[in-house]
Image 1 (cartoon, rainbow, N blue to C red):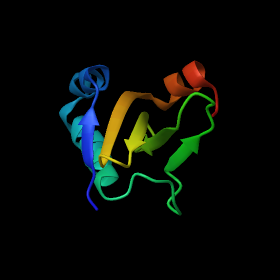
Image 2 (cartoon, rainbow, N blue to C red):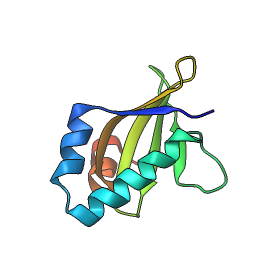
Image 3 (cartoon, helix red, strand yellow):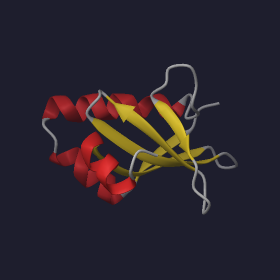
Length: 95
């Protein structure tokens, strides 16, 4: 089953601020969430343990982290935020 990947406006603004090559790398990685947004053997995706709701993260090229949710019922993956790995660790800690 293919998921529809939606990107929140703040995450899209971040992507658009990157150099063209970095934009391509980030977009290509986010496209992989269409086929399988769940964590697996590759280790770049993880479900975060938050009491409020299910949140996932994916590392991109050892430089960026994207946070996203999965709506199974509607087959939608929503990218909520993207930032450098360093900023993600400062903002969220090592989740």
